[in-house]
Length: 177
Figure 1 (cartoon, rainbow, N blue to C red):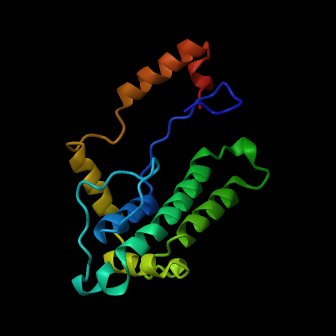
Figure 2: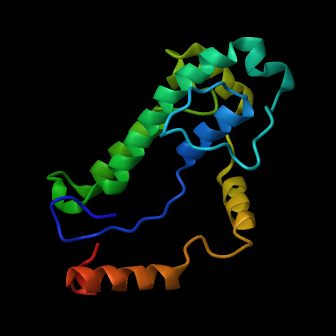
Figure 3: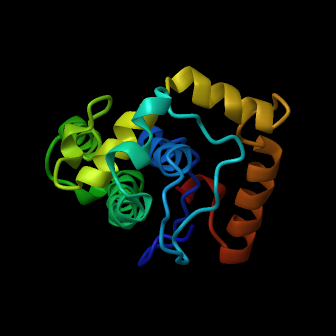
């Protein structure tokens, strides 16, 4: 993506545990989420609630939980975006302190496995508790399987894109972020 106000571009690929967790909660609890341009499609392999007796229907209304899910999703995306787009030249505090604070904010937005951070969204909290968290290894395995066990990043494609951007913007490749 082009960084506003600069000649630099940034390429980043990362799997956000919390964004994936939010999608698992939505799909695993079959929440009725309002449609919108920022609502991602369903997961290809939705999770099953860890305790069928604890389904969202038992503790909350799927429509109410879905309505609560969308603002939560937007908060998580905003927090993750701030973390991804932050550059060292934009901060005056030690870089480690800034990134640690952002990670703490992200973790506090969900707080699995009890999801106490969702106490102001009780229907969503019940859904999240029913679905539960997912170990990172499981997410990584699903991603590798979906890509036929190839690397997450197709580096030859990235290198071609970087060289194209450098050429189109008359920028040295080493100056691109």
